Amino acid sequence: MIDSSRLSGSPSPILFPQTLTIGDTWAFSMSAGEYSTSDWSATITFASGTTRVSSVATLQSAVFYWVIAPAQTSTLPAGSVAYAVSMASSLTLDRFTLQEGVVKTLPDLTDPSAVIPTQTMLQQQLAACDATLLKLLSQRTSSVVFGGKAYTLWDISKLWAVRNDLYQRVQDEAAAMDTNSRQQIIIPVFKNPWGGPYPSQPYYPYS
Image: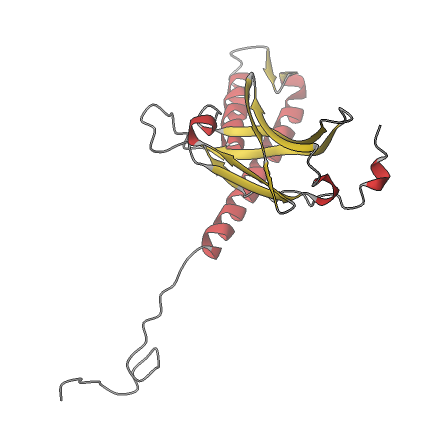
């Protein structure tokens, strides 16, 4: 077994974008560090449910490169997809998972068969919670189940607390999305021939 303390040049983690689009080509790179010898291979795996997409990196100049084709990314669902980056040695048969987590994926808008949601996951959860509360308040049922927990009219305050927490998270999400949109706004500035954005006097080019 390799002494992991020897691997002082551990690769820097991959910085994933905020979202990945299904059906796009996904390209990533990562410094190989002390995994740059020929016996090491790097694999990145994306998974959701029973669907798996794996890609083995190409090693070039001590950098691992992955390119995942649209035909592969299109098999993954929109929403949340788990990922893992692992290293495997052909000499010692060791394997190390260096990075794992969850990334958000967006649907392919060019796919006519794709169902495009108009609400975020949090907004959908809030709507479902409101519908559950309405059932209980209208006394159409003596108990309801939301998020795997049962609630009755006697402890409806607990469900209201869940609802209010969801509402606040939806508001925070909306504020964050608005901030991101403002940061991406490009404001063109048209300069006049004398170099300023605003004329100090009328300009007549043919006078």
